[in-house]
Length: 254
Ligand SMILES: Cc1cc2nc3c(=O)[nH]c(=O)nc-3n(C[C@H](O)[C@H](O)[C@H](O)COP(=O)(O)O)c2cc1C
Image (cartoon, rainbow, N blue to C red):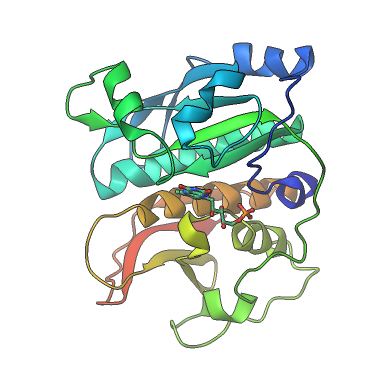
């Protein structure tokens, strides 16, 4: 769980830029890597190397020597979920190497990014700034919803009680600490025996930036399952959502 606890949105980066070890990860494991999300969308990762002049790409909200990571995906709910999933898995690899990161869905120069490249029917849903981290921050006390407000058993109104020693606990906790746009934490999970259904809390039935959060949450949940080597399988269940809870995907614990 160290990586999950270590991650937080870093908005000030050191002027030194990345260490050679960190740059090596970016060059060989992140840059130009193509990965598929759970709904089949393929995303290729593009990087803009850290540069002091790039503050203009995020309206000064991001300070210091920042680089940017982005990709293109279809403007659909499933496209955005896959984007969050693929990018967050890479972001966690970067966190492991102490590279600071911050998702930017609003406070960045969209005109600039949209003018770099034109890709048929695809767009950049959000970007991630990255750079050398200033100080470590432990996020165990982060502002998050409590377990019982996000995780349920059998029905969406019955809180899930999960012992900390349970092999599934790290997965739920890793998801709880995931980043989300405006810290909205739209994830709602319902556990029914060995299956967990993933819903998104919504005000309106529409596709929006919170779909990215769903993919990010799924990546964190998967990360947590892997901590205890729990075998799992993602699948699209025969589950209906409601006007408030949009159903996306389920995972079976094998
Ligand atoms: C899809 C997405 C978009 C975001 N957009 C912005 C943004 O435009 N500007 C910003 O400063 N932070 C942005 N954030 C960071 C969130 O505010 C942050 O993740 C949340 O407040 C939780 O804090 P933490 O990441 O430090 O745990 C975004 C996060 C996500 C996941």
